[in-house]
Image 1: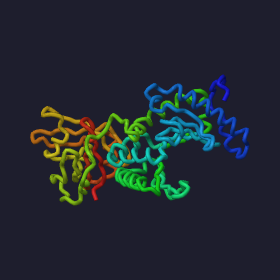
Image 2: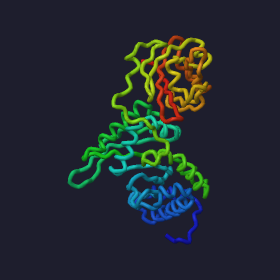
Image 3: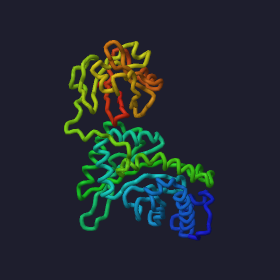
Image 4: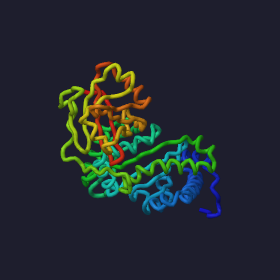
Length: 356
């Protein structure tokens, strides 16, 4: 590549070139433009991110450019950009067994945190976790099936727990590897009109991907202090379904089923019990505690738990968005399952769904 060239954007001819199968000159031109793009992008990364992704390069075989932890775009976690005739896809990927073993082990141990980090990216993002078979003699990998391939909004908490566990288990087997891809696509028209602004747009998307990158590579500052459970949380339906019966309580969390009255639906709250309040209290003077609510595939940070006098009953007071969902989803006397988890000292997450 001519080092004197300046990056001026990814024009439509760059994308069109990838539709010219066998046209060596067209592909060479497109890759040269992508290489200018990735060098400029790498140079523009914040220092802290560039330290984590010190390598920028081109994979001419796959016709992609990438930012990586180490030489070779399959070494550990990396971010790649795939240009095609109609789109540019930005992708956080892990393909090698060692990197996957680390990332999937963390995801399996802390599935709630991993699911939340992925889901918070937004509905424009997709997740694909493959199951690939490794030939014993040649080492060649062939696609066997997709463990998951859909928008991240289709991955609820329970599905995430099962997915991470199965992917980690299979990846530990010599004959399998389970590549992980988190991606978002932009139309080629969108990208082509951006000019050099595409650098700032991609910097923003790299920034929102970094919490997932840090988590899967073990660099996350936000880690649950809770060790993996030796026993799973019992299902709420195993306990009597009454508004005053505690299903399970521990330092880690609890599952509880509450009955919704007409007033609860109108005002947007869910009553717990006085036995639940100590789980939320920071100290003896605590009156309210902010919580994150997970409902219907969405995370909401505008809700809180209140302490009611005189008996210290705990009440989940919902944000307007969660309140509307509650009204649309439930009728009077329906039961809602409340699953509370302590992710760390500051962060408590409550998941809501119809009981049973």
